[in-house]
Image (tube, rainbow, N blue to C red; front, side):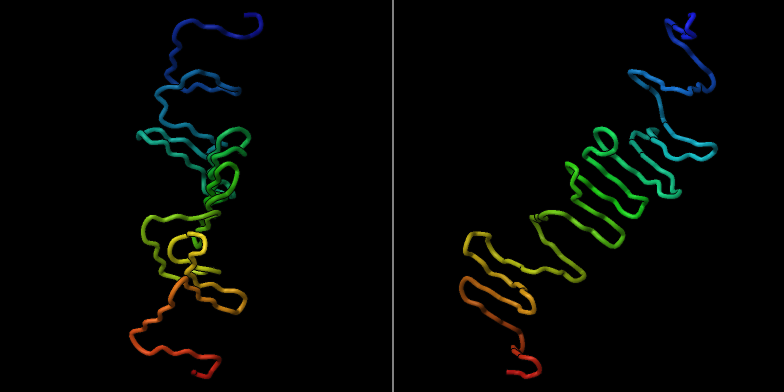
Length: 173
């Protein structure tokens, strides 16, 4: 037409590449196995759909990482960010709930387990409570400043397989 726009009715078939310097708009894109972004000869990232899974990749160059987010402008939840391959952040409703690094697993909030919890290293806590969480039912070990408290609702039984030694400073009592 006189505006430079072309209109076609029916199918258009191409046996080679189709290039666009603008936006391609469509309702459905079918039979696509890979979508990538290239600048020159360098591929900066791609979406691979070729084996019935969705694989998202970014390059290992500079500070480029993998970010998955909902909503608009890379700020809405849910949000996953590899932050330059140094860590993986999981966010829910805009709040970071898990920070995973090579030497750190940090969770914001409570962790609940319906089975055993074990550690091959140290566990750091200000207080540990045992038994039910009913009001007044407190069997615990707690730290306050330099003091250690052991509390029991009823009897406190120490039952070692060998000696029980209580020591203040360097003096055994």
